[in-house]
Amino acid sequence: MTTNLRLPGRPEEITFPALLARNAAEHGDLPALSWRSGEGWETLTWSEVRRKVAVLASGYAALGVERGEHVLMMMGNRPEHWLSDLALVHLGAVPVTVYGTSAPEQIAHIARHSRARVAVVEGARELARWEPLLADDSVPLERLVVAEPAEAGPHHGYGSLYASGARLHAAEAFEKAWQETCPEDPLTVVYTSGTTGDPKGVRLTHRNLVLQAVRLDRHVELPEHAEHICYLPFAHIAERVLGIYLPLLRAAHVRLCADPTAVSAAVRELHPVQFFGVPRVWEKLAASVRAVLAQFPEEQRRAIEAANDLARARAGHRERGEEVPAALEASYATAREQVLEPLLRLAGLDRLVWTASATAPMPIDVVRFWAGWGITIMDAWGLTETSGVCTVNSPDGFRLGSVGRAIEGLELRLAEDGEILTRGETVFAGYLRPDGSVESAADAEGWFPTGDVGRLDEDGFLWITDRKKELIITSNGKNVSPALVENTVKEHPLIGQALVHGDGRSYLVSLLVLDPELAPVWAAARGIEARSPAELADHPAVREEVARAVDAANERLNRTEQIKRYRLLTEEWGPDSGELTPSLKLRRRVVREKYGDLIDGLYEDSYEAP
Image (tube, rainbow, N blue to C red; front, side, top):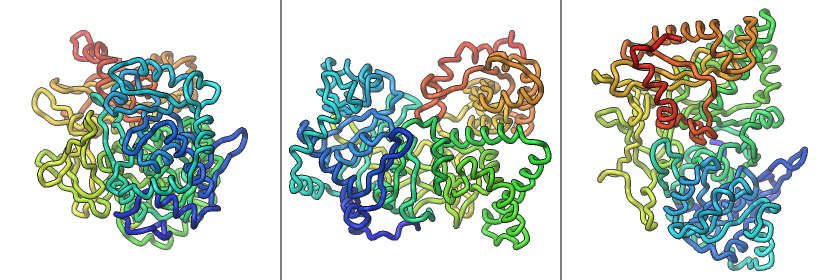
């Protein structure tokens, strides 16, 4: 357990304003929140955070925000976002963060469904999507608050809202408001990112998320008040837990990273002791390391590979719960000090003691890659509907490739078709209805169907195989996990992304995307010149190597799972182009629609192999 701090009550009776009050009173001089300011960082202590939250709460109250109403926010990871979230919670209002990549129709759906009257947005880019809603009679939205002072125009500026809060703030009213909040009151509504259909509003309470934070904390060994680099969107349950709720419990230090693409630079600068990344982030980091290593002399690469082998062997003993042999421990310590640590230090990864991933199945080759650097990624699994994680690997019990064992207070069981069912105090009460009521998604016995398919081993470790809705059922009735096939073919360094298709068909086909970092390095090492991704994808040597990669993957898959035909694409998929969710999960429906003609062509008699 990381946190030995005094709790202001029993976990099931605590609210987050009570935790902030404790932090200000008992850890007030410790850093709480930092963000980039020019070439350095600007920092607020916990006592300063609470003072600003109190003023902001008064400002939002003056704007007309009332207890129980939803307030929408679309901003990056900036202090105005983090502080406003807490200020609204202290009023008893319900902050709802909307993904910055949301399309206008998605924003309109959330605004209409949540019945929010106020939205807080970052600047001109967001205003272009939100202003039309003010004139839409079907949307209750009445006013916008704009964080960027120069872009507020006729709307309320964040600065003026703060100034009005400072004029009107009454300490007694502020303290009374948050003390009226109960553990069963709503803390936030998180709209699912919508891999299929419209986003659903998941209402989570203080009790849901305090218990989630307390129970997750018991699985993590960190120095007290450790730093967290906060770069994922606050619309994602993972960052809400790791970047807001856990730091409140731990009185930890949050470092806001407004630009997610700059997270690697932040890691290099800060050398964190903990780091969380969704699978795609770990894949990209691994690809970057591999690209750098490819430039090293062969003798140095051999030394690194030998050190990697020692690290993986050591991890294997720990994974099996065995004591690491003394000779291996000594050899690893030497290899880490002399070979691995200097390179890890350059990347800012030398101080890591806790690394984790969640949201989608982690490719096992990526897990093994990082194990070779002495970095054991503690994969976890959960959903927005479960307040974050349901299962977690931890240093005292892990299986690489699994998503760990159930956290305290949560039950798991498998349905006949392999779907994972769960129940417990961290599972949400239900989905928000347009009238503000909640519709339960659990059965009569309280079991919530997660939509994920998996298996439990004899030691209680859960292994995720796929999303139930994403399972491919071929025309001969065979079930295929697309994630299994995609992760297998992506083990080749040239292939960065993959989609497998075959529902209702007699065989599988695939769309493949070259890794934008490793592919040019691979090509340069072979004297291949290509000025663009399209030229690289069209080069005979690249196409031959991709064909070998598909053949190698097929050798490890059963006949039904094998890729019979494929096409190599030139553009990487991302959230901005729509193929990935903001949390970097594959939107299969979007890819299938976007490349429908290409996929259909893979089933035509005129198909020619690449």
